[in-house]
Image 1: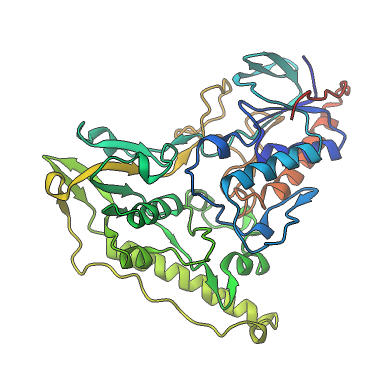
Image 2 (image 1 turned 180 degrees about the vertical axis):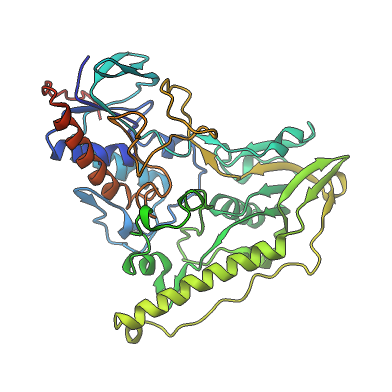
Amino acid sequence: MRTTAVVIGGGQAGLAMSWWLSKRSIDHVVLERGQIANSWRTERWDSLRLLTPNWQSRLPGYRYQGGDPDGFRTMPETIEFIQGYAKSISAPVRTHTSVTSLRRTDDGYQVVTDSGSWQCDAVVVASGACNMANLPAVAETVPKEINTLTSMQYRNPGQIEDGAVLVVGASASGTQIADELQRAGRAVTLAVGEHVRLPRTYRGKDILWWMDAAGVFDEDYKNVDDIVRARNLPSMQLAGYPDHRMLDLNSLNSIGVRLVGRLAGINQGKFQLSGSLRNVCALADLKMNRLLNAIDEWANENLVSDQVDPPHRFEATKVEASPPLLADITSSGIKTIIWATGFRPDYSWLDIPVRDHKGFIRHDGGVVTDSPGMYLIGMPFLRRRKSTLIDGVGDDARDLSAHLGRWLRGQRRPKHRRLHAVNH
């Protein structure tokens, strides 16, 4: 089978790219390994809600139209939203089509799937940034009597056996899971590493409203001093709870979650913990206050200050004066470890030498310079700070589709018959 461009992945990023390719009259097909919004269906826990408000669900030609713009979608609602988008734009999606190989050919690319091969001039990798759990080396040393699972495998407190729980990682997933388990009556210890602390609301507005209005999310990747570090920052420490409550280490501590340093090792029946907990928390507080300062400055410059609540600051993160460096596994009663240590993409099917030493695709703002005609979308800070949000993929897709169109014109290749999917 032949088409001009193949988009690998039918999530929000792949669908946004499809919309822009159609807008530019570039024939293409979208290949999705499962159903549309497959990751949202199969790799999220039951109670999870989007951490972005409903109004921020904006895709090219499609956005939230309901009566609760400041609410937060459940997973079923998120799946319905993305499904609705695919249907509304008549995206040429081939579902239940797994890519097993992507190769260069003399005249473009060959995309091999479990239901046939595609020849194309250009390819867009939109398979996602969160295909696999990113486990630290210490995970290999966990005693066999302790149960382990990742945040991708966690569903609800009922699946966790009796006993205390150690949650490793204090970003969005780790803090939400720790909160849920503690409120369900479990004794939870949270191992805290680097994190991004944010209030849910500030001066009467959602913190993401401020970041959107002030242009923080639109920051261009070319204007960042250390883009590698920016792309590896932890996720925002936020939750989309219906009551809009703030989720941070102080709120967890207040309900009984024990805070300890990063899990550095396991040896002779003891957890070895980093002694940097206080410094890590102080740095997160400092960065949060810098953001709030920038918001206050923007509000003053744009004459918004008199329309919102006065500026204020949040209590510093409370931690023990001398956090423990060791914790006995037996006396702690910990029977389960949940790894909330981030994710990584799966490129096991990629047969083109475009990956760096860590296995990530090398690119310049989504343009894979080592392989002309190849593009990447849906990765952290790809072109903007908002690149991994539903609200961010549309702008990235616009830019990349424009580059793709120029590249195709430069190749002066003939147009191919437009192919339509038979299912959505």
